Image (cartoon, rainbow, N blue to C red):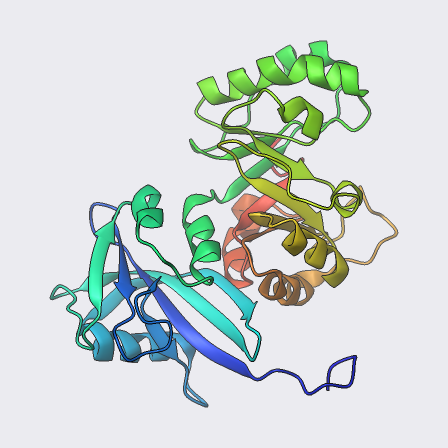
Amino acid sequence: MSAAGAPALPLIQVACGVLVDAGGRVLMAQRPKGKIAAGYWEFPGGKIEPGEAAEAALRRELQEELGVDIADIEPLIDFVHGYRDRRVRLQTYRCRVAGDAPEGREGQALAWRAVDALLDLQPQLPTVAPILNALRLPAHYAWTPALDTPEALSDLPPPALPRGSLVRLRQPQWDEADYGRAAPGWCARMQAQGLRPVLDRPAALASAEGVSLHLPAPVAAALTARPDTPGGWLLVSAHDTAELNVAAGLQADAVVIGHVADTPSHPTAAALGWAGFSALARAAGRPAYAIGGLSPARDAVVARTAGAQGIAGIRAYW
């Protein structure tokens, strides 16, 4: 029973496949006539039978629907989406076709598209958006260490990260004037190095294009609508279910959940552990970064297994 005394909505377990070809294109399928939500685009897959492992279900469903075998399976995102009358848990995997090209064996149309062109296929099921964000967001999210003044930014070496990684200008000790003065030059510097800058002051984002916004949990809780992020993502910090609900209300593209392990920055707070993180990440309904006492070199594999998009942090990268 729910907290209000109503029966809990049934939970349907689904395995979903994001098939990627040698050129990086991704396959989507259009639901055929006669099915619920006919005409909507989705990623192929289907229900997991009782006692069946998710990967086994995915192999079975893709063979039935598309006539293909798959290889190089890796977790992409695991989340729960709520409909009015049911909940659906989608365990989603990135994989490639091994052998013959897929064909729509149930009368469904198929389309291969570059990741950035997948939004051209409309309409889409609501469960597609979190998967698209998981495909587009990077695995690394670095936060700057504390600096006394904006001038010290020029002496801060850039983190050794793959191109496209996120880097947040986190300086809570600076006032709005100092932060706003430093932000434009810092964003330009990050972009010139192939990194994606993230700011955490909405006012500093006003004139920025292609810059993402990170909202600490208290700031997010004070908002009633999603801030404008032209060309960028909205990320929100969350530590519990209530803060995840705030992120959902703001239509955040991703959340940062922690702290996962013991960390000097939160010496008296209990760590979530990977089981706690995994439960929150699944409930988030969107990509989730893990933060707190983690190392990308040491924890990347376990983070992905726990459902993380990647790892965020300060000491993890500087």
